Amino acid sequence: MSCLLSKLCSIKSTVQLRKLSVPANTLLARRAFNQPNHNLKRFQSQSNSLLGPSLFCISVCTGSVMLASVIQYERLRDSVKQINAFEFYKNSIYRKNENVISKLKNNFNKLEPSEKVFGTILLLNAIVFLAWQVPRWQHIMIKYFMTDALARKIPVSSLLLSAFSHSSPIHFCFNMYALHTFCRGVIQPWGDMGPEEFSAMYISGCVVSSLASIIFRRSFKFQGNSLGASGAILSVVGYFSLSNPDQKLGIIFLPNIQFDAIHALFGIISLDIMGLIMKWQMFDHAAHLGGTLFGM
Image (tube, rainbow, N blue to C red; front, top):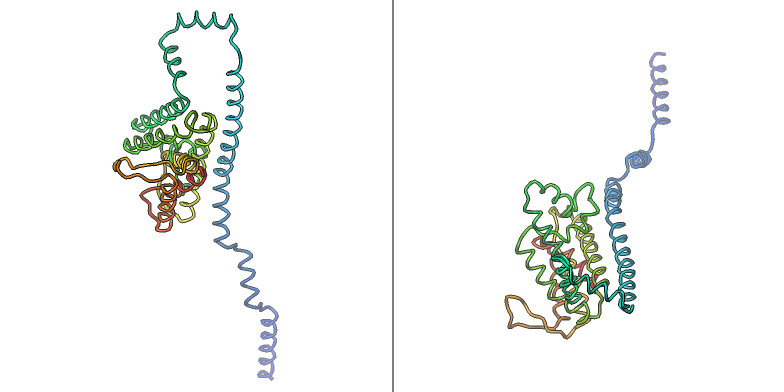
């Protein structure tokens, strides 16, 4: 009797276990539902962190183009206005009493449009370069005047400010020399761009190249900060090379070697693509390639 009772208890317990048991695939499904995929979480966090820089890039590009159009319209409208006798008399009196600042302003106005644009960009880069030399400003410069792609929160202003930032004198001099060389061939009277159009393209090239660098570095977890005007300057190079494909270019240190601008453009693009594939980190090839493609 006791043996039969123990068997019935064992049967009852077995039935209860069978009723309470859940298939293995159901348990895995519940576990996957309760604990979302880590890759999905990582993708969502990366998308959220790139949303601000992407919107800032679009806003700067759109705003710079609209502002350039307004300024260019006002400049052209003022250029066709005739100076009346009163304005001529007022300007003649003003010239007699002009001070040092006024003389500098008048000398600046006598420059070619390309020289004005280059002088303004040079001045801004020089101010930022001098700011890097002040030790107590280092934390501000690191936060806002260079981009850290792996930072948890990227200041969107750094996409623009980092393109006017050089901490090395060699880097600063080389970029400014390259900018001076190519902007003369793009801006009127030698080129076909007005100074406002060039400024809009240059500023847009700044943020586009910075965003390209952030996306690439974040995708491959490349550590390091990025700064410099190379991406924006290469947007000018890309535009110049397509506009003047047969123009002869040379290398600073090898003046006897010359090649067509279109061949130089393809060489730059190939070098940057190779740098991305080989994951070279000496230069920011993603920023260079993004700026070049934007200029094209």
